[in-house]
Image (cartoon, rainbow over all chains, first blue to last red; front, top):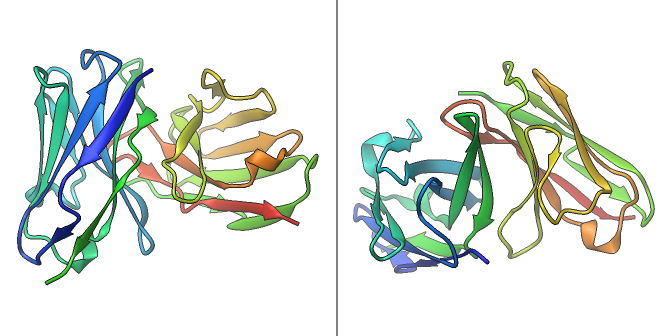
Length: 121
Length: 107
């Protein structure tokens, strides 16, 4: 059974960088998309971006200038860095596995439990 | 960006009821649509992808239909464990986007 687990600080100061890691167990990193999604009361579910197992990345244009997603296949981990955070970045952050059908159709079949990241001084 | 809307935003129903939730995309997305169920404090769970393909392990009382811009999720006989919030997600193009959700609660 594939499992994902987010880890990282729950409190980040404004203007600093939010860093989260997702550890994948029970399955291979290969041939899947590794996703970050966040959920806040004000904005609902928001796709942040993905990294494919080959290292290709795609980001939400609304966050693109501040986001970086990286992959460490040796540790079965992928990470999110979101820079210059503000209170608007306070949310529950989920990592997820995505699969595509016919080269698109990205669907998220396994999710972490989510981790609350609060931006506050 | 493709905007997703859902209706209704909430509904009250009884165990055994048949319910339908509608999702509309702001532009055509073929059949690239997924449905998720989320319970309080939990991550969303994939129910349906490709508009109508049931994810492994999901009960057959869930079904999806539609293509282009209009889609529906139907639960044929609502069970106690189905009371939750349901989201649609377009899987056609980046940025991937979600609907605002439909909360299903007990009448």
